[in-house]
Image (cartoon, rainbow, N blue to C red; front, side):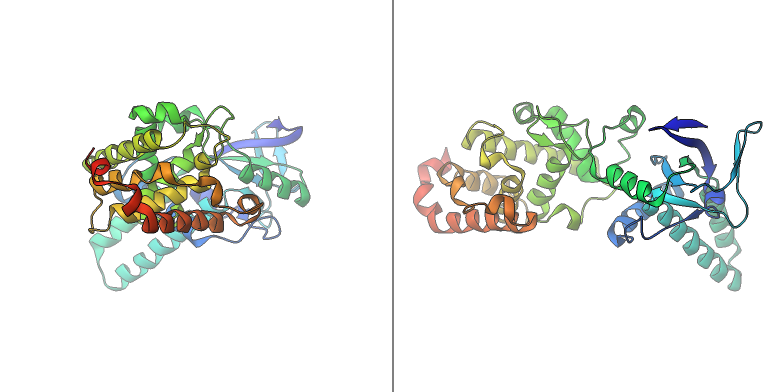
Length: 353
């Protein structure tokens, strides 16, 4: 039992087998499940079930809404069978475990019908480990639905610093997340560009790039896609593929420093929408032969000093238009300029240099 933001809370670590029967989702507080997010979490949990790799989840926050009685002697919150804890933060995590449990139970039923005893033993072991998986929880004992909505909004919108335990476990991340860390820590160019590696979503004022933006740029550069549509952002990958990508990305960012004005927050070319659009354009030029070509990348970069970056947006478009529209407008501007002008502005002599 404790106090959090002036409210009574109780902290506990519970196995998933206990949580499955305890929680409820109030759709007036929670958003609808996002299938893409759920799929990613299922992949992550399967690292633990299929590959026996350790995985980490931040704690799940619940609201008891006044339900239950706290037992001081046993330091336990006792709920009646009909009483539930309402999810404030962690709906997708719980849904991932729920979906995997249902899938394993279906597989068990089929294996039993077919008398596939070895498979039944394998599924039983996975279910046992799934049920025993420990989850940290914090439960607000007596906040109302309005306070729950505010808490949910704050948790999901505000930048969050990475805790020390999560930083230690960040090797359990997807390909582009690990690549971003490698790049930021090893590539000389990133010392000038400055990336905030201590905040997952936002950035401190002294940094030019956020960690999340660097990942977005890498996906755009090597896949020609927005981050949400990335295909190669898995947990399993070869170290050689990682190092090759980091090397090429280092070449790319060196080129930006060589051909663009010095990095500065006031420069439009260094804003996140232009940077993502630029990476999308370079991807298209570097992969015209079917494979990412370092020389094609270096050639395309030579157009950058000639682009009128201030001519991309008219009036208040850079603030008014939706983010994706701003990115694609900048991408088309750069692409059209390159198509029309590269033969005149990039000389043979310059290309060889």
